[in-house]
Image (cartoon, rainbow, N blue to C red; front, side):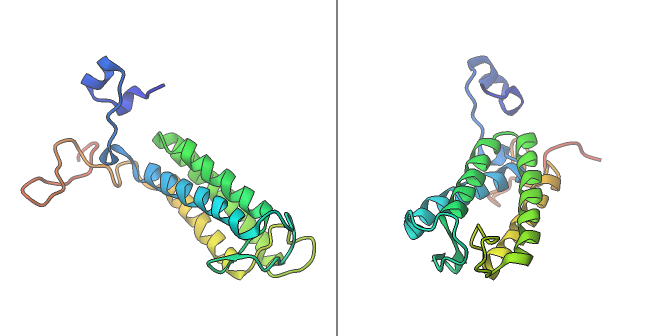
Length: 174
């Protein structure tokens, strides 16, 4: 089902959406990019870890310095697919931002206690690089949740080419 608020009057009559990147909010762009990155990370992570040690601690399997296990890959896939599902509207992208903030905030705090541990408590096989990335991911989620809807959105008629068109945020003017 297409959201009529994202459609031009001519699109509403045909039921087709012509949403462009300039019609997206910054929250939607963040959710889409995070969704793609985490989905790819989950898929590539399975190539790194194979099927061994699914929830093992301190596995030694790394992708760009970030430690992984099978469960960690599943979490990346769930987060990535969530972004790919929720980026379509500003409200859903903001919800995704809040979920990222809460989820990764909790995982960051958890990681402070279990990073590099070989005990079963480190069931996501976290290392220091992971924990730093989890903090950054939480803050990125907070940004997606709180950034003004007009940030990153251009008004109709803006070319953004620097050839006479003016770029200005859409929305009410003061």
